[in-house]
Image (tube, rainbow, N blue to C red; front, top):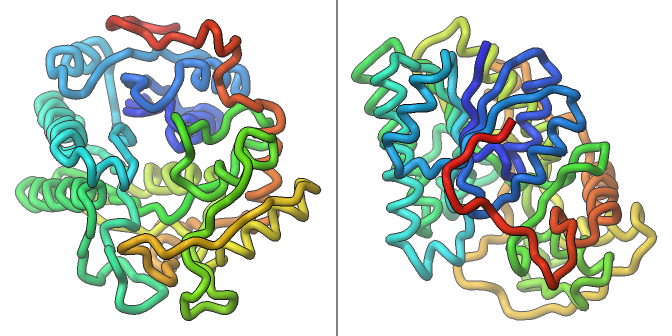
Length: 354
């Protein structure tokens, strides 16, 4: 079975590629490397001992997308590709709507054109906005509060309409909570461009000496220690959720949304404490004002995924932090494997990697 993975060089995409290959699937990767690096895919091959083809393509280029479908017999698509920074989406919303929504529309049109109607969509818990209650179930009202979240919500609505119009589609909407950690090999992990937007890579970069201090936004939330609580999930557990969804859609049609989270929330200070224990490094921090729109607590009810997909998260917070630290320790500058004087260049034209 051949799976097209868009955005396969990214953080979650690369870990999912590893699991797909190790479970006997063939893959084709499409990526424009706007927030990822080709090196991650070389390391996927190193981990798995398998080869696959990679196309340097922007999904907005419909002709190039069509050529991939013409050249390969694709059975299903896992769609990760998209811009993903909440703050950036507020600053440049048109770029996010153009890239995420229009790019997805083009992909879905080509899938329909070639009668490929099995799709796993990389959605996000941001579609829930500020939830009224926790844990969050899939049937609550979607109320995304920023352009990034709204692109995910819009794409979900497009897919709902598509599946209702044509019952031969099989679609899983996977709503991620907060992925952290890295592959146990230490070869692939989270490598953000510029200052990290997420907690764990920021902590890791402090521990390795790239940053000085963690700023914790707010210490007066109605939580046990006053800091915000989130549902952190190991990226490999998250990757396995895609395989379980893929197995499920072989026997089922229609569209379903699933929360991929642990069902347990950890505060910022609990994550810092866990990281300090496994790394042996002290993480200096200071408290600053809350960010507008931040909420006190957000964690999943993952019961639906457990019941329907036979999936549940297996790894705890210390294992998540230990794996994140191993990745950072082994790769102090991420995938940037040559000197800062000659930074690694991304591809400048369409190409095929073997």
